Length: 204
Image (tube, rainbow, N blue to C red; front, side):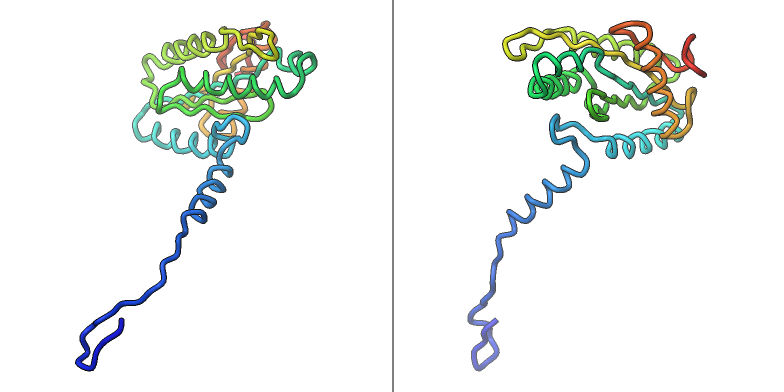
């Protein structure tokens, strides 16, 4: 502030810095830390943190949480025949479809490679499995529509394993592990199969 002889402010002088680019760069870095660069989905770190919060909320509200572990059955064949570029396009397209058929409150993540995770929270215990099966049906429907890659229609097939809190595990690590075990049990049953942890053939 510049003042006259009486002390009255007659002028104010300052510097203004545009930090838009800095803030945008910080936002990009923060997004990259928690999201998959190819699909834009949440990455495993964000998924695990969200799962922990969902389980804490479920303990408080006496609700259930489910983890769906999806592994594509024919992804290697696609990469071998059409190349990795086509594989990347499939993953990106599939990511959008999976998000489109889940609730806004659900979380879809890329676990890595051709594996996806879906977090379903706030499930009512009396009809949790019914809700999960409805989601499975929607996921199958999203995958069943052909995706044109390099001029060739391709239909994604996948095995899905399901693990539920609190009946199948009571912590993040074991809930994910059990969903993974259920997925491999589904894969042994053939393409486009799913399995719940605790079902026959899936280690309880």
